[in-house]
Length: 146
Picture 1 (tube, rainbow, N blue to C red):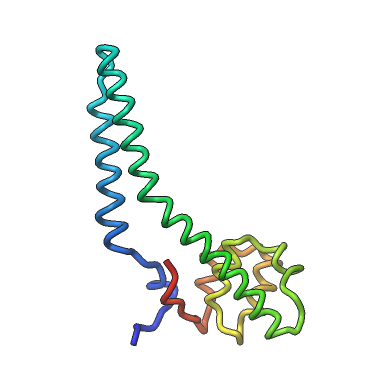
Picture 2: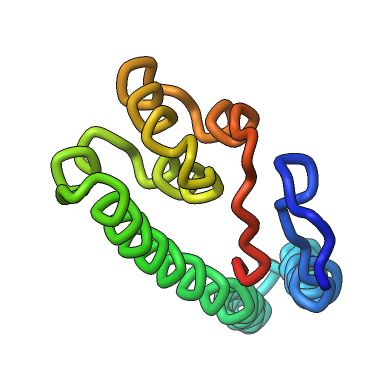
């Protein structure tokens, strides 16, 4: 069983991505920039080729994570629409346009007993996602978020 999730421990690091792939891609990009040589037309062409390759490697290692997060954000928005309808019997669309995506994502951690009050507070006070998460008393864990 997973440990209890809360504001202090809800962020996740994935060792392969955060400590191996991205650092190596950044090191390669930095190394390529340092080795850039503009002394002759041949070395300029080679340097540009290496810079493009380094930048491409960085993008290839970063884009799948961006796609996964964007997809999860869409799923969270759908989940929030369903939860709001389940709790209130009305659609979430009118509320949703008053909140930022980051606020909606933060609100998804709130339990059903406090989410409606937090939604109202977030709209009235334009609460930041960090403040929303800190004010949650009944944390609804999400152990599947990337």
